[in-house]
Structure formats: C-alpha cells, structure tokens
Length: 89
Image 1: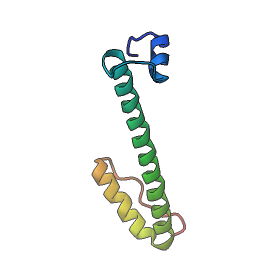
Image 2: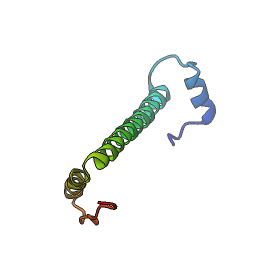
Image 3: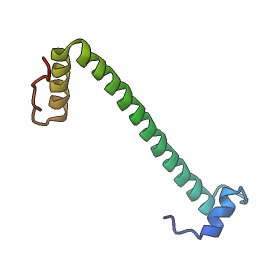
Image 4: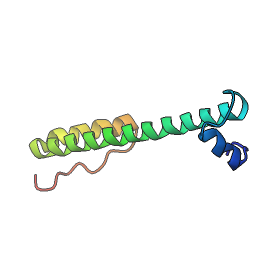
C-alpha cells in the first residue's frame, strides 16, 4: 500500500533502521493510523453493545419508553419512523 518493498518493511518492523526518516517514518505512520482505526472500531462496537443492552432492558421495563427512544434515534438519523407496534403490549 505504501509502495515500499516487503523486505524493507520487514526490516523496519524488526527495528533495523538508522533514523526515523523516509520509509521508516512512512511505515510507522501507516501502522499508527491502522492501529487507531482498529481501536476506534473496537470502541464503537463496545459502545453499541452497551447501548443494545440498555435498550433491551428498557424494552422489558417500559415498551413505550423504548419506542420513544427508537423514535428519537430515527429522528437523529433522519430516517422514516419504523413500525411502532409493540409485540405483546
């Protein structure tokens, strides 16, 4: 992806470079960007799982409130409102 020969990337990853310039800098910067994206993705998944659990709990306690929160989320996303019927209610 960086246009650097794989053997040179391997040497850089093994710490076999003199100065943090040129290709060594490019490889390290790229690795940092990849790591940041991976960590951000993990954080988003964790947050989504937490939110899903809270919404499931709210649905059990108060289906009407859960529907209101769903409507709020739809409004924030600017999407048409989903079917608001509550099964078993």
